[in-house]
Image (cartoon, rainbow, N blue to C red):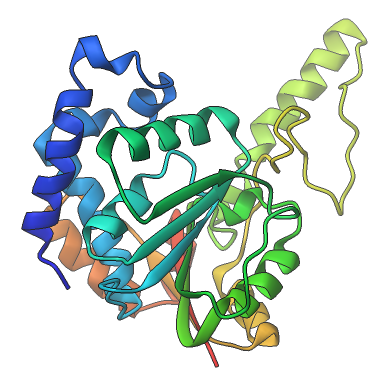
Length: 280
């Protein structure tokens, strides 16, 4: 695996010029709102380390491999994987503004072997056993049909290769589950004051969907249940609590490593989780 230092320097070199005020207008403002850290070398190193940590957790070296980001957004993870040596890096997303920005980055940085397409999970398809790694980073909680994704991921992956799921919607954390309570109370209070009912009706088996993009707004997952469910699609799985560390603080990284080892005991305190699934 190429060294973190070299790759983070390459990421910084790519974004250094684009982060200048006169060049920022080339891209959707969301790029700099979502990744303000790309304006600094330390921030670029942080984002690079984030991807390195995912690969190390899965014991995966992207050098010479074909990778797919299912819900790639602005494409930063794919750019890092490309610089880590991936022979081909593919991604798809349903956000037109994000994909347009990503495609401009690909063109501007002349990233040969990096491909992005505007497509939904329902529309996109690849040949069987096309990829050595599939990553779903902060995306699975927005899929309208999770089982469809898992079935396709199993088909798109080569045997023995890996699916990595990273998400901040940990349903094992009681605090995150109760985050919906204030919103509900606010809607009830508004109804009592104005006699105006909410515009969205509750459906216990259906997540709310963004009417413009088609994305599920948020979906909570219990990591252990998700890992167990993945086995039905032909995966060997393991779930992990995740507490951070991409910033490089050695104390945080040590604490995260210890707490991840104590999964599932530590899941109730973690905001995020990781699931590593190997196709068998």
